[in-house]
Length: 174
Image (tube, rainbow, N blue to C red):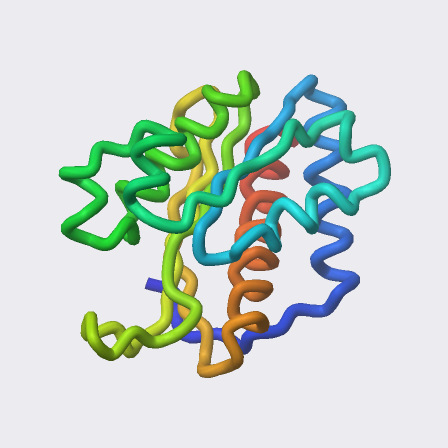
């Protein structure tokens, strides 16, 4: 597990990572798609805001609960329901299945908690992020922010998986 992190990154750091992902994708004829729940579209927003995003970004899907994860991305409910859709296994399923649905080679996913849910015993916030290439898991990490407002935490998760993706792709392709 990663230690707890601050919930902010420098905008320039994330922008640089997005540019690296774009260049690696363009240079290697890769396209990517994202599946997210906890980040509520932040990840899609960040990729979509990259200049000429259409060269590498196919799109994404926000699937917030197990019913939609099953319906839209074929995540088995018997796997999803016991963990409320939040586990390494679910993150890996999401990344694999979104890339297949969008017919691209690279899939990125995020699933987790941005706010406590006391009635379900969730007090520690965390998210799992997964990156797959050609259906193989390149990375599946847990991200654990310090306390913060839910929107800041959602952005932290999206920024974190983008930085991880840039690092992983750079190591894989260069």
